[in-house]
Length: 146
Image (cartoon, rainbow, N blue to C red; front, side, top):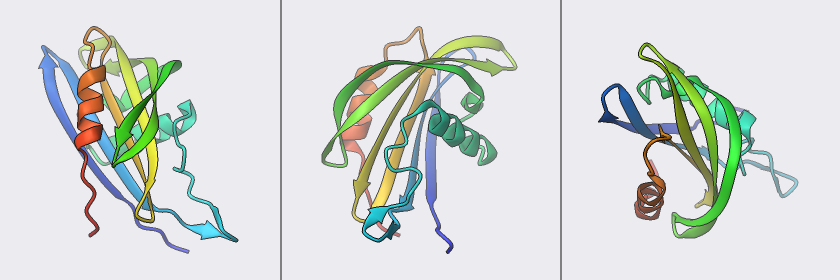
């Protein structure tokens, strides 16, 4: 079986040598015997987050924030994502770049939408409180089939 997913990302410079980024990944929600077998379904655990960031790095989507290590869960809160209430898990982590080490926050949400699993990952410097901005971006996200 072959499954094709889509990856879209946006990054912006928020301070000298500091990047904030948002990554969206969609894959079909393949079901076997009525149960989802999509590994991204509910993909908010640290291992899934690391794998997603590594994928983004290979796709050169996030401007270097794929090198996040030492992920530690900090909080979970509900947000609106594609019209659905979804848990947004926030992690503390460390990113290694050419400019050195920096503490970051990683926010992850996953929803099922129109037969796909959609995962959002946002990364920003820990010195900036971007929680409201992340919530607004997820609430404004639109889904279009290709």
